[in-house]
Every structure is written in structure tokens, then in C-alpha cells.
Amino acid sequence: MKTRRRRVLGALAAVAIGCVGAALVAEVAWRVLEPRPLGSAMIVNPDGSEVPLSRIVDYVGRMGNEQRHEGPVSRLAPDMDVRFRYDGPPMPWHDEKGCIAVRSNSLGFRDEEFSATKPAGQVRLLCVGDSFTFGNGVEAEDTRVEQAEDLLRERLHTDVQAVNAASPRARPTSPATALDPRPGPALRPRPRPRVVPQRRRSDPDGSRGSGRRRLGTASSEPPPTHFRQMRADRAFDHAVLPDAALVVRAHPEQWEAAQQGIVATRDACAEHGVPLLVVVIPMMYRLDDGYPCRELHAMITAFCESVGVPSFDGYPPFAGRAYRSLWAHPSDQHPNPAGHRILAEALVDPVVDLLGPDAAHW
Image (cartoon, rainbow, N blue to C red; front, side, top):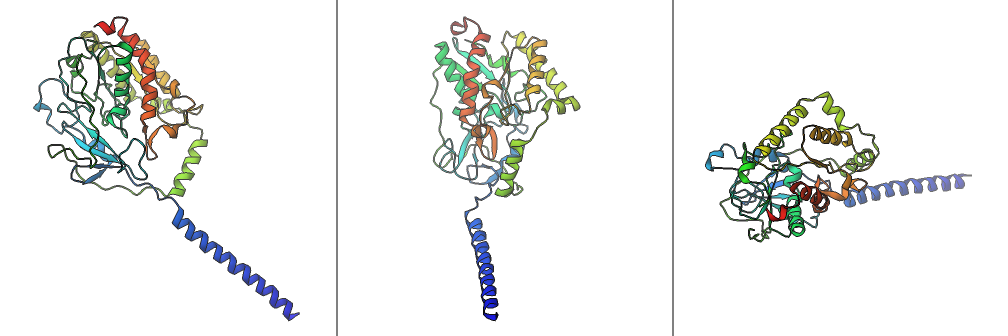
């Protein structure tokens, strides 16, 4: 009897030791193999100093030097040369350090140098908007602005220049908040060849000399753990989200200001004979029946129709697509090059229709 009892106790002890050992091995394996939580995306200065990308609004503005230029200028800082660095393995459109280059010309546009006086025979488009048009997370040539420029040049068989006049710090109170007052007509965003210079790629070290704008430093909050992020992602994928239009109706101040901005932009463009097209860019979330901004898109396009402004709803070309595959980075939900391409291709016909049958000859 005692022998049997000892055998049972020994077996139980062995099981207990095995369970503890397995738990320890699992703990060690989890700590070693668990993917490290992604850190904050950073803005990197030419001297290597960094500031969280979440502070971009504080650092890309002109900060009082608007009077250095006569004529049209952007509200972005001129001659800016920084990189956006993302944590984790580099995406295919990043350099080997996980960065993309962000540069502005002497007028403050994320574009090559160009003259405010449009050459005869050139089709010029002025693209105004926020960070989705500016192209957070992608190189300048991967934005919908540059991709649409190439597509329209092929379609119209003439020179086309699309100016990226967007700003990541633009507010929804007006479509023209990226610009100083009335620069659009001054830039003549109207069909009228320039030699298109080679687009600059990032230097291997991301530097471009000492004459560019340097950003400050700041701190950021640590990211959530990988486990919590996975759980949050699963919950979001299955959540029933209210349409953003409910929020807008509950707090209509910004929407009312945006309507005033659309009308003011319409009037300024009409005064100078400049065609205007309002493009509603979708958020890169739940691009299925659960898309949370469908009604908001309808509100915008309906208002534009009521005030005689042509508009284009950018959601249908994205409907049903896997939205995370279109993110610039797992930590950045702006469109990646593929997302920009989808919208650029969708915009060709509406833009050609807006310009009219003689666009290639203007």
C-alpha cells in the first residue's frame, strides 16, 4: 500500500514538475519570440536628431516667414529636408533604414522647383488637401499627385504638371487651408511643355546638405504591447461602427466652416476661370459594408452638387479591399503607393472630363 502511494505521489510530482517546466519554457519562448511592439514613427533631421512624427503639425509650418517670398507660397516651411522613419522591418517603398524622404522646394511645396508662371501649352493642376494628399508615409513620386500627373500626361499626350500643394497640418475648415490667400489662381492651375526634371531619390544616408530646415526634439508615449494590439485589431475588425456623419451632425461647426470654404474656393476659381474638383478621399478603415464614413461621403458630394461644384467620391474604387494591405505602415494608416495608385487611376477620367475635350490643346 505504501509502495503504491509513493508511486502515485511520485507520478503527481513528476506531472507537477513537468507542468512547471513547460510553463517556464513557454514563458521564455514567448519573451524571446513575441514580436516587439512598434515604436513611434519619427521625423529625422539631417544631423540625426529626431522628433515624433505625431508632432509634425508643430514643425512643418512657415513660422512667420511668409513675407520672404512675393507671390504664391505654401504654408509649409520652404527648403525642408527631413526623413520619416518607421519602426520595424522596412516596407518596400522605404529605404534600408525604414525611412522616406520629405522635401519641400523654395516655395514650400512638396514638389520640384517650378515657376509660378505657367509655360504655354502646359496642363497645370493644383492639388490641395491634407496629409492624405501630401503623402505621409510614401515618397513624393508615389503620391496620387505625382502618379496622376504621369497618367494624365500619357492620356492627354501633352505636358502635365500636378503641384502638390497639400499640407499635413491642413484643417478641415477650408479646402485651401494648405495655401496662403489666393495663391491658386496665381499659380494658374489651368491647362496650358515644360521639361520634367528627374525626381530626386533619397541619398543613402538621407542627407541633402546643411541649408535645409531642422526640426526640434520631443518625447512620446510608449506603444501598446503586441498582444494588446492584436486584440484591439480583432475587436476593431468585428465592431459595428457608427457612421462619422453622426459626429459631424452633433458638432457641425467644422462642417459648416468647410462648406463656407468650398463655396469661397468655388468663387475664387470661377473668378479666374479655373475648373474645380472636390475629391473625397476615403479613410483606410473597414473598406466593406462596415465602412464608417459612407454617409459622410454622401453629405459632402450632395453639398457640392447643391452649390455647383463637381465632386468625386473616392470610396467606390476601394470598396471591398483589404484595408491593412493599403497602409503606408502598420503604424500609419495613410495610403501606401498602391493606395495612391488606385485613387490616381480613378481620378483620370473625372479630371479629363472636367478639363473638357480641348484640354490637350490649351
